[in-house]
Length: 324
Image (cartoon, rainbow, N blue to C red; front, side, top):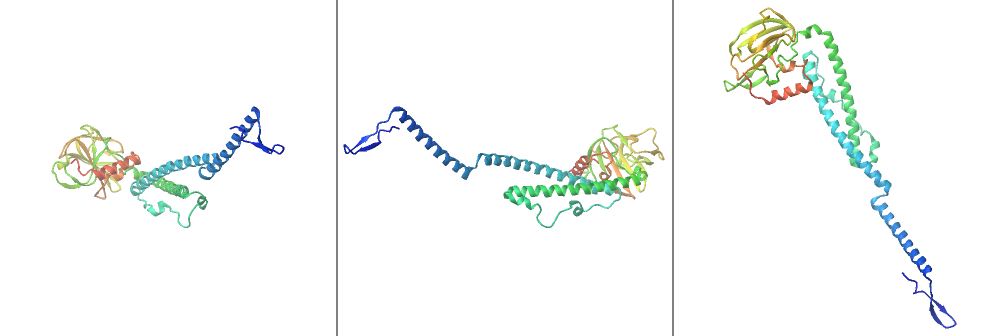
């Protein structure tokens, strides 16, 4: 950009005379114009960014908020997982531990410990809708989980107290697995593998190769050891307090065992086999209470975890065929 287009009026000659600038003046003029133009355009840019995009501080805060929101979403998934685990523990507590110890179940309403009334955490209303809803849900769920955990702790204390008061009786309660193998089939209507039609299967079938150890599930007295129809070789143990267990399809019994023998929980009583009418080697295990056959799975609580118990329940619900 040059300065040759500037003029001044000479009164003596009555004409416009072009102003002559030296090189330094032209450079200073051009630099001034570019600086002023740059400042003006920068100002416009800052105004635009502040109005439509945000200041650098606002952009950094926005990015940080996005990271925190994503972290909250991850936390939400963890809370949902914890919620499901707590439900499983509560189910085991009701259906297994409290049932076996003769305690009343805790209702779902008591366990849920819901918090009703007015909207909680109004301080979250200052955030945008999605963030405030997520914060409110997280706060409410954590509060609910804390209450339910507290209720579960009280329940376990009650179970512990009841157990301590009934130790002798509990020694006679069938409370462990009778063999090491996993559950194959459970209590209920099942298709017989040999006869080919559904019928009541009043036992739990455990995987057990021929010769696998079989253990007494509680203290008691042997009342029968011998052959019985399609069950093959069996052992029956009276545990007192109305409980009795039956172990079937055995290959042999322990050398020290006979009718009238006293046994303790976990004691070796026999070896599994394939005697009787079966599809293959396994252990057929029954629990009787007051002369009535009941579901053995409800008594497997002394040597399996809650996760294993839930896994056994899944097998019981999905496997529609028995081993005998």
